[in-house]
Image 1: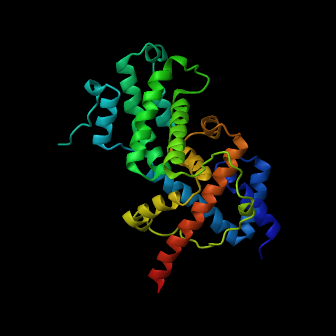
Image 2: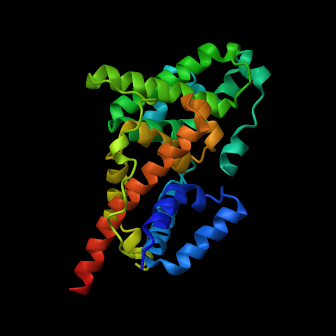
Image 3: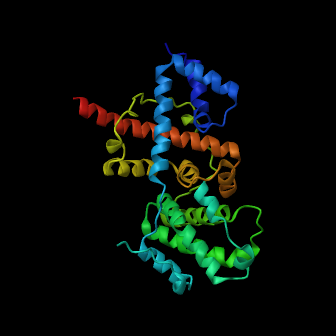
Length: 88
Length: 201
């Protein structure tokens, strides 16, 4: 059954844990708890998945061509704008 | 992140001397990330465009005073977040503060959604509807958490860089990031949980 105290401790450290920012000893303690507590395991997995979904979907930001053109014009750099290569 | 580090390859001397080609290169490399940050902070493309333009106008004007203590990207992000916050204050007529204390009632908030949705296929996790929901979920975060999440998890800045951009302590950045991530996990669990429930009914 869930050990409320340990679950709470885990939740407080979870973000640092998934980032790999915790010391070996703390990690070992958390991992021991995760073996015993299914709820915390689900929370850890779904937190990891949440972060990874945002990482994946934020890989290639772009700025609309008209926004970029107005920006370069405002900065008086319109002669230096790099247009995206057209395909084909 | 790697892409960010690659972008740091500028001649500061040329930039400070007003070299247009070098400045155009800087603008070209950073306009997309600055624009995205502004759109996500302001939820309004027109306001975001104004912030984008003001950021580079200010950068050009103040480059000669850039002391190099932080990286050029951190410095640009700082200008952009300040511009976005000023815009929020001006247009929404609300008090918006990055360093406001976090609502202590949320301190002990436990996860409510214990649903294992990680097994869903990529087609479901990355459907256009799901991607829209991911965006909407970020918009639901309070500004003080949202901006930290955007800088850390969307733009890939380190904790230290984020603390420099927002002039917050590193521990405050970590606390806010943790809250933001847990909040988003709740929202995504709710959303993907409902998808699992629909498919099993």
